[in-house]
Image (cartoon, rainbow, N blue to C red; front, side):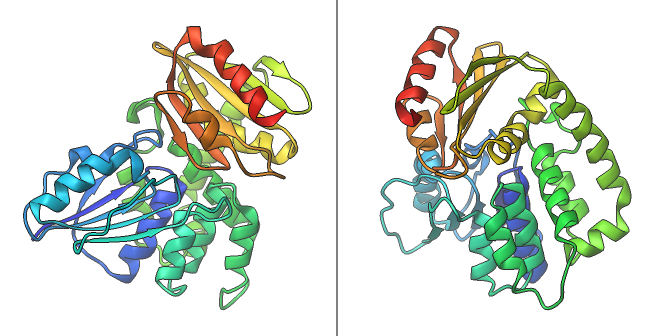
Length: 317
């Protein structure tokens, strides 16, 4: 019997798997990629009796491959907080899915494990820009922690997941997971691996400085649309810059457009004070998806830009 751990390469996916594998260690095939690479189950070729854990990628986007793997005779545990659509019951399928805008996959795993590695859940929630959820979970920890450092770690892990391909990243997601795995809690990681924090902090600061210079195509009280060039720094920072803008301007919906060969990579953040509608907006376009508070479009054609801006205005104005 083989084990597969399939997880999003962002902070939420990595911190979800950290919790699980620190509690239940197992040798597994790691299947992950950049944050936008969500059709990960296509890479899994399972046999009868194999066990597949899937974390922080949309069930709806992987539905056909879930069915394929179940038909082979594999067992699937699926935990996520993105739009799932209808899920048909199956004896070999266990789901833990909650699409509430205040829930992350790492928070769901924290509940599943009854808080056994709650510190990593806190980091995952911070990385997903769910500060209030992170702080609620932090209140359950046995002793106080430096929440500012936990938040920094979550943001940096999340930042590392963005890019068009793994070569855009500072650390491949599976390598970053393996580097974090020996640390039983984030406090130990921060103390024992300062080089990781330093490397990502410097890169993050440089990329965010570039982002602040980007022009706004639309900028009013309801929506803001920011245009990034086709550059590695832009691909790396598109999501975390969207989070930063949401925190800075909590009544405004933001879209960060990063130029790619096919058109634009789009990252949308609903207003922080009304976390809804981002997934509905992005699913109007063929490669769009996500969750209510944060969603995206992998390839928006140039000729569809005006249509997207109009749709965003209808959603949030």
